[in-house]
Image 1: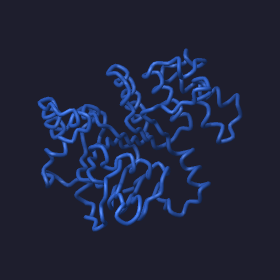
Image 2: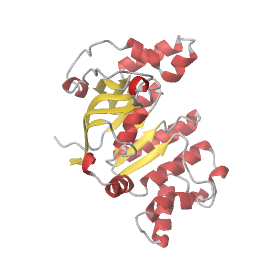
Image 3: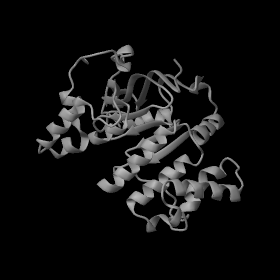
Image 4: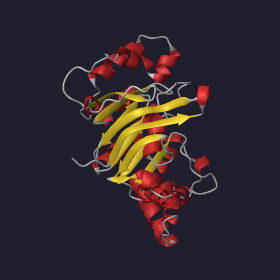
Length: 290
């Protein structure tokens, strides 16, 4: 079986000695082209650190990572940047649009790094804005848009290079429920076009868009299971019910109740996690980092 992403015993440590923090702890993970994966877990579980590794924004302390069958450790800085530019699209919770550029210019910006001439850049950017329903806002500046419009503009920017992998870190975290649904429907359409989507989220209801759900805790993958698109897995539904009955704001924010309800051993058929369970690390642990 061919995988677009292959991760074997990947670890990330910050600091030294007694101040060492284990952000990722021997994570092993394989991802097929075209999967829509929801990555969940409490704050500090390692979700964003894992996405930064996959997106080539950071380097691991140890372990192997292959993208499209090629070892990332052998990439030069130039090749890492080229891989990010051409094959990976990023969608952030805070949008990260440049305030002094119009929406059209923001969406076209990634193409300038590929040497695409201006006329073609603007044409491609306009086409992407059309797809996300913002063609009539192309001359606006970010400060003139709503939160939902900003995120749609960020999605258009992420897609303008036609990347094969989309990394979305809490893409609906700053949005109201209506805007969040619009953004998720866009991500669903992106997935249907054959893109691989990796989404970090605290919101259990968003798992209905994914066909695979990964839970992380203390820097390790503790649960990895396929899921039917359009359905919230029973385990997640139980966790949502627990959250509704809880008055603990921290649990509501971090869905830590979900982790508390997870059985120690997965019941049922074989899953990717069971085939490659993370090994327990003997590294000294400090404060966990997201």
